[in-house]
Length: 430
Image (cartoon, rainbow, N blue to C red; front, side, top):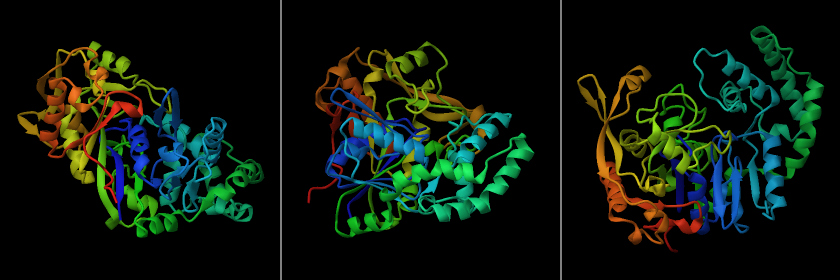
């Protein structure tokens, strides 16, 4: 069962959409397994740029089956806008199937998300799109799934059960009158009708594909350090952004996973709040932000930038069981006289080699850096193969391999498909 999981190795925004799009050439099924429209995957094909939020990056190939798994939370309005945008640009979405078990972001989820964030003394940095409150309802067993959303009778019954409690909460906590059942149903009905024929049993589809020996690519959102269990809690997303989320978020068996590829930038970025040990609040950080166009695909927010955090990267390799790394944006480091990699956290008189669970301790840590020689301006950008990269850039790649103990299987030096050098085949020839 040739199945590959693509996962973020940092705080998200590593370039997973680009890597998924590239690997989708050799896959037959592409499955998005967690997160919501708080994620943004950018794919550049020739002169065109596509920004995807819910739909798997493999949608740009007309012969691929794309699945939105049960672990994803779906805003129907956003999904329909994304479908319409793709179709207007000549991209077929006929092969997209949505899990009937995926939970739906309702209007009250978006409202609660904004109100709760405004009420926090220490902001999380949520996008305000309702993702967290939707996952809360999923775990609290008061959520609405696609199978109920597309059936007006079932949706009415579920809202009769759920909406009174939401309205009481909104009134008591925020002095907000909440929602009328019939008004909410009226807004949901046209959305449900447009999505109805796209909803089905994606678990059966993915398991059938695996049983038939098809190449299946699982696409994650966000990154390991934003994982609700393994990230810098509470400054995390609300889902399992590590490789363990792939089987639970798709219904595929954990035994099917053949490889886990971690996508990482040549440096680090973070959107929103939370600890960031290698953050650069100086001219170097600003320069990386401008060179890398480090502004959120979904929110447009400027990303915080810093040197590569090797401590966090080694942790991500371990937690995900990664077999290889896809290194993106190496060209952004062109022209720096020296480049740095954090190899440990100094806390008092101790050197920590793993990220501490305590945010208090993490915030007190200072990065311990290894300093490597830089390489000339524009040299990575000009390279047409891995072999053409300057020796210092290849030395940087080799340092990462030695640090993590796994190979860098792909290196990207630009936004296009042709700008990624594949050093090791991911899907085996059959």
